[in-house]
Length: 260
Image (cartoon, rainbow, N blue to C red; front, side, top):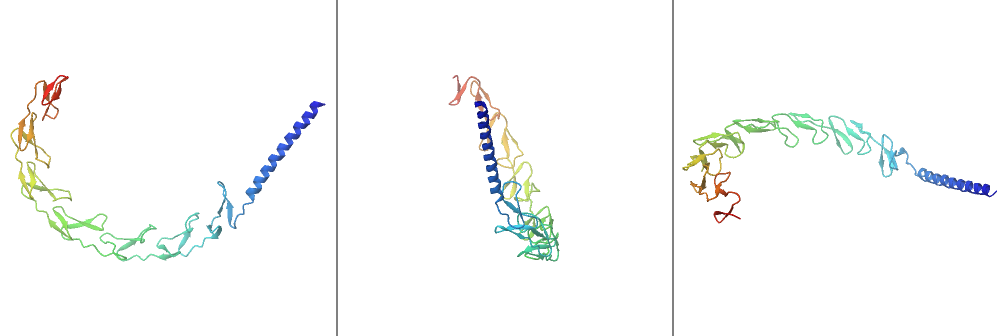
């Protein structure tokens, strides 16, 4: 008898728990369903809340119909104004106005800017495309909205003047600097090319800066001469050949090599 009472008691507790779970779930569903959707809206598939259906956009908590102006097409996006202007038109004050392409220009597909570009040999000035005045000894530069001087000339204001190459010099392809460089064995001094004086026990180098020469191995540069390196006892020339270092295990100190 006692066992049967215990079974009935357990069953009652289970029934009570099930009833409470059903009640809680019903309360949750009731709260979720209590969110009022504005007209022409639907509940979001994730994250909660709502969103406007296609052809409408949210405006101050409601879904307003997207009004597409003439010469535009719908984008069906949840951002922006919901439409874009067609080719040959651009947005202006919620409308699509025709793009006026000036003479010597062509329309572009870009939604930004003026909607047109000047043709080759012309450049944009305000809303027009005047021709580019290419000076003598120059040519149109890519993409065709500027000009560049021919080789042997450089730009000065709106003209191309000849580059004066000094004796023992040659033209360079660089657009920077003077436009010329000195031949090997010469260096630039005061607008000309002066011969490099290589001292005894020295040799020319390709470098166009500093002295233009280096000392042979075993010598070091001292002003305009190459002086022999005096190697201390228990030492040898270093890798550069312009100084010395102590043999191991000696260490250099005060111009000599000492055992540690």
